[in-house]
Amino acid sequence: MTESTEMRIRRLISENPVVIFTRSGCCMCHVMKRLLLSAVSVHPTVIQLEEEEIAALPDGAGAGDAAEDGGKMPAMYIGGTRVGGLESLVALHLSGRLVPKLVEVGAITEMVL
Image (cartoon, rainbow, N blue to C red):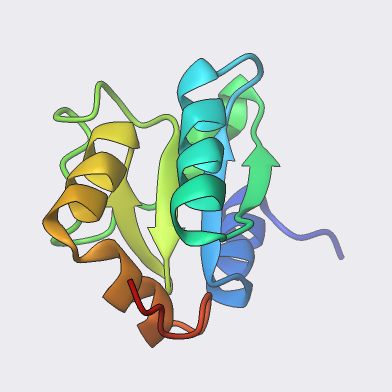
């Protein structure tokens, strides 16, 4: 029995502390990966979706507004919760809330700055 696209996406979100869903050639995804690596030493799981798979992404209640981030892609999830796109990631980082979120889900150990 093959797994549906929606079930595969939900499984990947639940199995990985930090996951970014992207489409081919997405420069914003590259920036997100670089920010996570250089600022907090996190290696996110990156999943490239085909155009027809993008609609299967769960929106996540109370998460970053997709319209605010310019659409559904790229989409980052931390600890199973949709964070949003690049703008939401930068806002989390600048507000000082990114590191505690990453510590909470076990993506990093507490950092001393």
